[in-house]
Length: 372
Ligand code: ADP
Ligand code: MG
Ligand code: MG
View 1: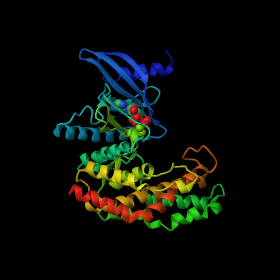
View 2: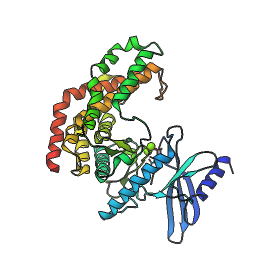
View 3: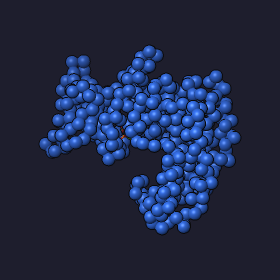
View 4: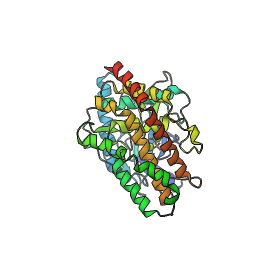
């Protein structure tokens, strides 16, 4: 047996799996954790599980991270059961380690966790039909709705200031001053774009401080492949990948989804004529998200959805630009100027959203009326 296999033996023996291990395969197409699918033969038949080695270079607080997941999944389980749902499929369910903890620390220093395998459902990597985007909106809205009364402040901030746009702006300004690679002179236009919109960096934080926006449980990785779609009905049944669950604002999840999902171009498209905010996709996501939230969003939260999309896009563009100035130390790049290209698509989107703001507001109003 290889060292890697020996470690997995050790790990599997230290979780409370039932019966005899009959299958063990590397699974899924996640980019962050190492995911395995296990099957055990038990007296009640074959049972499958997901086993994951958590990415320690990204997640520095695995114990707190798992505490967040325990809190959120046990809450979801109770709500789903109370609504008469199938709690084994509609939320992740943690399998405990033999010592009763929700994770196992192996002898090589890696943290592992295990979940029930969600049967009869699939994850999709790419939005192929518009319906997929709508399904992900319903799923993330529903997630937000079920957790609307969760005490969000009890969650750990596992990545500090993740969507604190004001602190991202400070980081950005520091990168401009450092000008590590001497690029600042060449990107004056982009720098000005950020500075002319500083209000966007503060608007959400100020509303939060004034208690106009409540602290919520946010997912923070609202990609299509982080929801499971039922193979029979084609409907989203479960939100997975809860590593980045943190306290935040409802508009963070909504805004980030619009940022990457409603753009007509790729995130690193060089032909900016191809980049704009697709209003049909914006409407579809808004419809799904508002329906999924089922009346749990406040009026101010609904009002701020379009601005939230703009802020998330602005923040992301500013991070790409800061990384470009720093010499591409954070985001992986595949060509010269890659982060600058990414920054430009984000700013193009922000500028486009500014033009479309009243149309976006009208869409939010349309679905707000339906939910009331
Ligand atoms: P990553 O952070 O690496 O994206 P994920 O938690 O999203 O890790 O898991 C990777 C993939 O494993 C998912 O996209 C999905 O296909 C599969 N997966 C994860 N959890 C489950 C589960 N409980 N049931 C079935 N499949 C799962
Ligand atoms: Mg994932
Ligand atoms: Mg992930």
